[in-house]
Length: 465
Ligand SMILES: [Zn+2]
Image (cartoon, rainbow, N blue to C red; front, side):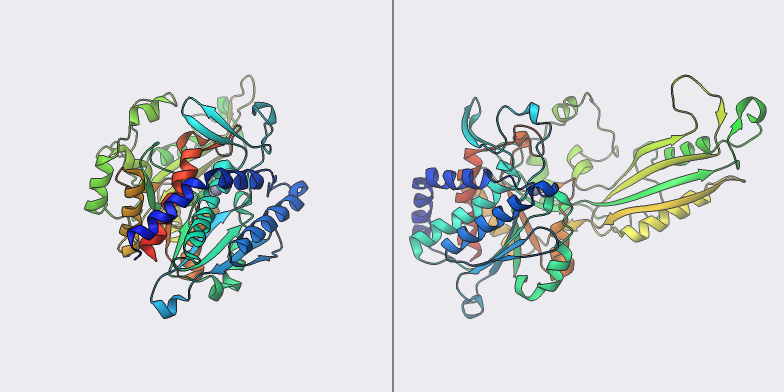
C-alpha cells in the first residue's frame, strides 16, 4: 500500500504529460496492424516492435516472441515480489486491430489518427483507438508516470500483448502452455472492456460461455410431393419446429433437463450493485425496434444479458425457400442452435443433455443427427480475492461514481485461457464506451477515457502493489 502523497505526484505527472501520451498513442495507431489480412503481416510485426521499444524505454526487459502467426510481446519489470510479499501482476492487451471495411463509411483515413472535438468532448479517431491500442496504452502510461516519479514500479509486472485477438487467437493457447512459468502471476489484468454507460467504471466479473449445435432431422428418404403424400407422411420441418419451440416454456425458462446444473443465483452484493445501475432497458431495446424483455419472466433485464443462460435458434432451413412456390414435403430439416452459458455450466454435459432431449421427442420414422460447433465454459471471476474490492475502490475514487461488478454477454476467451492454462484469475477493467464503434467505421476513444484510464491504473497499481 502506497501513501497517498506518492500517488498524488504520479497523478499530477499524468495530467502534465497527457499531450505527449496522446502523441505516443497516435504513433501506435498509425501502424495498420490488421491481423486477419496477410497483406498487413509486416505491419503487425512493426506494431509489436514499436511496443517492445516503448517497453524497453520504460525500463522493462521486453522481447518479441515469434509464433506461427503474429508475434507476442512479453516484458517484465519491477521489484521482486517474493522478497516484498507484494503482488506480481500480469497485464494483457492486444495490438492487432479489425479490418476497416467498408472504408467509404469512414470520415477519414482509419490509420491517420486525429484528436477531434465533438459535442460529447474530445475523441481520438482511428481504427484501434478503443480496441485495443488506446486501452493498452492507458496501462503503459500509468507505468511511465510511476517510474518517472519514483524511479521504479510499484510492484512486479509482466506485460503480455497479443497480435491475433481479432483473428481468433490461434497461437495463444500453445504460447501460454509453452511459457506458463514465465507468464504466471498472482492476478491478470485485462484491459479490453468498457465502462457501464458513460460514467460508471466497471469491472467485468462474469463472462458467458458459448456452445453451438447443428441439428438435422430426417423423415422420408426423399423429398415428396405434398399433394400425393401430405397428411400421410411426417414432415421433418414440423417435427423440428415443435422441438425448437419446446426449448422455452411460456415463462421464458429453458426446459432442457439438467440444463440449469451449475447456474448460480447472483450474490446479494452484486444484485444490490445491479439494482443501482441505471440501465434503461426501454432505450436499449428501443434502439433495435423492440420494447418488451423476452427472457425469463422473473428476471431483470441485466440478469437476462449478463447472468442467465440462453438457448437461441440462430438459423433454420429446409424444403423450398427460393422465389415462387413449390409444394415440397421435404426429407430433411435443419437448425443451428447456440447456448450462452453461465456459472459452472458444463458445455459437454449440456451438449449431451440437449441431444438426448431432442432424441426423446422424435416421432416414429424420424431420426436426428448432430454436428457440434465450438464450445467454451463461462468465466466467473474470483471476487473474494481482496484485489477486486481494492481495484473497485481505486476506480470509484478516480471517477467519483461507485464502480460496479458487471457481466458481459459476449465472450473474452483469454480470461478463461489464463485460468485453464496458467491457473491464474483475471480482472477485466476497461474504459471503452458503448458508442466507441469498435470493429466499425469511425472508431473512437474518448480523450477522457484515455486520461482517466491512465489515472485509474495508477490508482489501481497503488492499491494492488
Ligand atoms: Zn479487443
